[in-house]
Length: 134
Length: 134
Length: 134
View 1: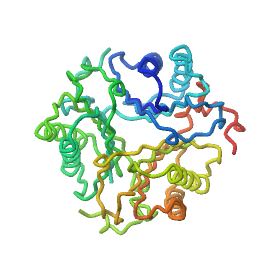
View 2 (view 1 turned 120 degrees about the vertical axis):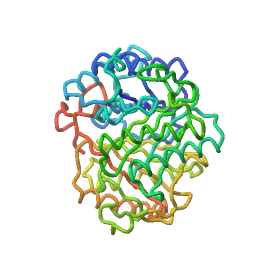
View 3 (view 1 turned 90 degrees about the horizontal axis):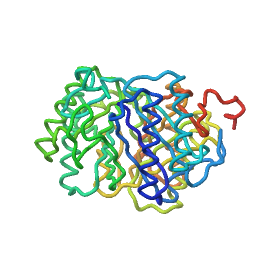
View 4 (view 1 turned 135 degrees about the vertical axis):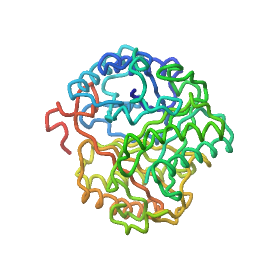
């Protein structure tokens, strides 16, 4: 039930973008218990000047590969689950597509199941449980 | 006081985009008691590869017309109001511009009036009530 | 720890965009006690038809320069701090780049420190306090 909005500079290959999205989703599957098929991601590719970020604040050094991942969930996650997500996502993205852990910023916003409608105008909280299984 | 961020693939006509935005707003007027003039919508048109979504999870089948509507409100809505919004939005968008209900995903995030400034640097919660009427 | 998503019509100069982002950040430094180096901003430039907004609701009159600033924080702010932010941001942006206060809409969403990872897969709430200082 989460969706992710992924922002980075334009210029990466389709393969890079796909690997980036794959790693972000895989971390959510592993650490947020998101079903593998529950995948909704939007990529925003920014022009030079459209991403303004400090190169060193609370981490870094950040490069032009800086990537901001904003996740909206469908139910609250514990602080521990979030900590695990951040660590795993950085690890997976370093392996593929090769994003430096310094370049990954992640923000999570917790939501509720009633806040979601996947399709057909039906509220997620009113779906039969089997509809939301992996 | 809500605003909506509407994501879909690039390629639709201006008329389609306008009808899409009209239907989304009309559902909010009817089900969230939003004044008709209280309308703020942003459309993000994505290139191929920038929208990654499961075709069948918890609904569908989704097509390349898949549309994700993210709504930020200015006061909390009940689960019932949200359920009504999802159903009405799917109905209106199927009528015009002809979006299949399977292709509509909606996510609502509840906010507070103090979180908003419409203009002139004034907080919405400090406006005279008549300023927020239809 | 906040980040801002800034939406406006395409067509402004790089200097205008930078001044806009500068003023938005400066208001957050002054009114939200954000460290000066704690700066993360994304600019979305929209084509005609991609921004739909009422010209007069609860303020205005809005022009084609209409700018929507969506801020996600890393800890809750009081209603008073938000009121101060809106007023100061309108003032700063009117001075530079010359944005009419009528054209500025701001929305804040409060978050928690555990919701953030700045880099290296580390949760912000687990960083040593000196890492988050100005």
